[in-house]
Length: 127
Length: 231
Figure 1: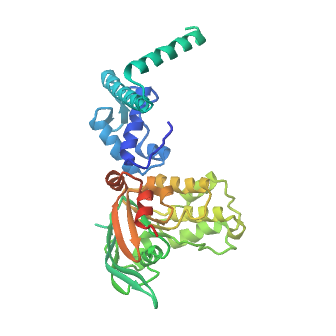
Figure 2: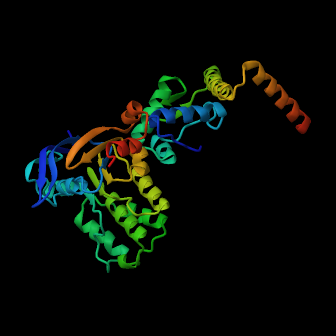
Figure 3: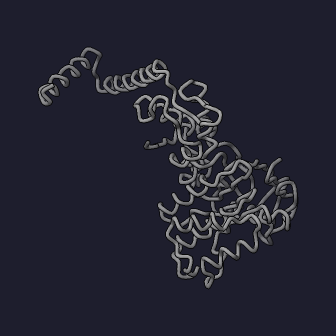
């Protein structure tokens, strides 16, 4: 996974977002075992305590679970994963609409543009 | 118990007050950034903790004791300049550290040196600046100490070396030990820190966790620092 951090938010909340992103995108598959806290911290280049805090929060939210000796695993609850995925999609849509509104486009115009884009691409790819 | 504690700590030299009534506490398991502009007292504080200077006033305690023979056995100190003689070869450094420090793990040091492709026959003076810094850091971090004091470990190294240094700090993380890193290059180390201590003209201007600063200020510690110290 690629880890990118912004300056204006706490690091632990960005870790939570990025691990969730990994889970909903399937990069971290359901039921898959997560690397150790130290290895994840090294991979992300962050403090191990911060990584630990992020994983504990993900555990509370039910996105990962611990097995006492075996380590931490990604949840197998597909509904849970799907609902997080939906929430991410809703956020992308909100940002997109904000951006388009900034250009002066209303809802109907946006839909028309999307439709237009779809037809063009359908034509190109022959789908 | 705190691994490092300062109570009303002051250090005055003939014409300057380097530290002025410093109170602070560092717990085991924390990676702490000691931040401040040049001349704010970072190196003085580290030298006091390492037992190289004595306080003018107040106390500094390492694991509950004033710095001395016992504290030096648990403090791993990386000075801000070269501390090994030029003629010394890597192999000799390993036995030198092994002789001095009971907690030195020569195998661990060898493993890290091999990973960097450093030849054990090479002498200190023939190494580049970056390699010298890496070798010295490896020696210091290969001790199983209770308190690591790293004075400017990333000043003047290239980005790959900086990454190696930060990686080494994370890799060697131990919940029973604290790591203090002094630097003015905050953006580079921010992600590996639990908390920061801002020094300003010999006083503690702030001690807070990195994420609490980001949460409350909505900006990185680096940006916040630039505002606090705007000239």
